[in-house]
Each structure stands twice: as C-alpha cells, then as structure tokens.
Image: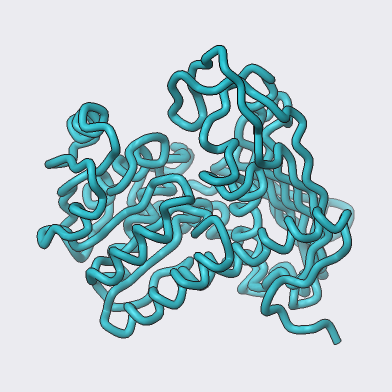
Length: 386
C-alpha cells in the first residue's frame, strides 16, 4: 500500500479484516506499506499490521513478493504509481478520483485494459458502491421497481472547512488534489448516481465557488486535520460545486458537493424518482434505505424505511444478527472482498479504470461549464442528444 493517512488507515483495516469475516479465495498478506517519512511509515506499519515499510514507492512496486499495489496517495501521484505497477504485472486498487486530469485517466484506463489481457486486474475505490443499502438500491432499480428513471437528486455535504483559519491542507491545492469539493465529494455522487441508474451523465451545467481564498499554511496535516503556521497561501480549488446534469438514458439530475454545509459531517445523499417508485439514501443513516412503491394503495402509500441489516441483503451474511448496525469502515472491507474475488476468478472488478475515466470526464465538464458561466457542456465521448 502506498500512503498511510486517512485512506491508508481505512484500507489497512479492510485488508486485515476481509479474510476474517468473508471466505476469500486467496490469502491476504499485508506485506509492505510505503510513505515519504521513514519514521511515520514505520509507525504506520506497526499500528496497522504491515510486515515492512518502504520510503520509495518504486522499490515497493519492484518487489517480487508483492502481487497487489493499493494506491492511497493524493491524486497527483495516482497515474505514475498505477502505470508503473500495471507494467510490473501488479494488480492495482486506486483511490478516487482516478487521476487529476482526463489525460492521465485515459492513459491509466488504456494501461489497465492492456494489462487485463495478461490477467492483471485493476479497480477504482469508489467505496460507497459497497454500502449494503446502496447495493440493495441497485437491485431494486435492476428489478424495475422504480420503472423509468426520471430524476436524480444528489448531495454530498460536509462542513470541515467552514473555519477560515483551517490550514491549507493538500486537499485545498489544485496541483495535489485536482479539484476541491467537486473531486473529493462530487466524484462519489457522480459514480453512485451512474451506478444506481445504469445511465451515464452526458452533459452538465455548473457553478463552482471558493468562499475562503487564502488560508494559513499547515505546520502539520493529515488531510482532514492539522495545525497552522503563521504564513498563508492561496486556496486553488473549489469549496462548493453545483451542477445540473442530463443522463444518456433520459433522466435529469441536480448535484451539490460542498465542504461548507455547516452542521453536516458526511451527508452523502441521493434520491432517485421513477415512474413506478422512488428511493432515497443518506450516509449519515447508512443502514437505512427509504423506498416508495407507487403501486401501493394511495391511502397508505409513502416512503418506508428499510433497515438494511438482514442476512439476505448484500454483504450482510458475513456480519451481525439483524438490527446490529455496520459502518463506514465496512464498505472498504466489502471492497477488498470483491477485488480479491475478481482477481482469483480472473474477472474484471468494478468500478473499473474505465468507470473512473468516465467520472473524470464528468468532473472536467463541470469545470468547463463553470468557467463558461454555467453553459451546458457535453461530457467528452457522450453521444449527441437526438
């Protein structure tokens, strides 16, 4: 694993846990973790259970005792590490967004497709696909329970940047992160919306806003927290993103991603309305799915709360008795289960690097539209509207 901060901790927990709850077809060994600071990566290895530590990811990729490279670094290094790992014949799991640009994502997707012909697998870590409630929502859509999809309403609301004195962490620098709330949060909403509906976003009209344009430089930082110095620097990413979208299957959508939604900690929400029913999800109530069946008698019909904890629900046969809740960390464990199973079976896991490229194209279209004062912009490669 390359990187050991927030996502590194989540991924480490997942790699360590998956084989203890799921019957994996392969044995997972936490062989090596890599970071820039020898002391910090040594501490991470000890804390998270890795057998060894490296300070040069190139040396890690070259090691013959490593089969999988898990990339948990900021977006500016995803492409270089992934391309090297695929060329070395390593299976690759890469954090989202796939890259910092469409060009990088295209190169990564092409390399992944080429490597797959030789049995080398790759996947993007959009972990919300592995929330049991959202996996159940996908099943309901596939079964036709919502009918024709008309509208998508998606929000991802956090508030950790409301304090203007919060330090200038790497997530606030375009050269490191690619974009702000748009890529950090909006990428999840884009992927979930496309995953649930089975449709791709084909055009967008957008607004981006940066509320705090200058912040203290960090004395230390882990990405979502840190301490400030007395020097200041420019914020070069968006604080909030709003956009409308058209989907290639005829649906329309409205999206919001912000790290300035005071009072909201991790409200990744999505609601889908169709001709036969609707569903709604909020990550702050992760074990619940709201579902409305339009065929029910109107005198008693309405959204009903489904507690998604039954062993018949996706992933949950491995966990606790009904009503005993699971959390955010379990999505990464499910991700490892699916990735390892695909590697063992010789199948291509999803979301693929191609799926990651599609999200990257939507992010680029949102930025282009915002730069053009909200003019609706086609997503690269999307079919022309008839």
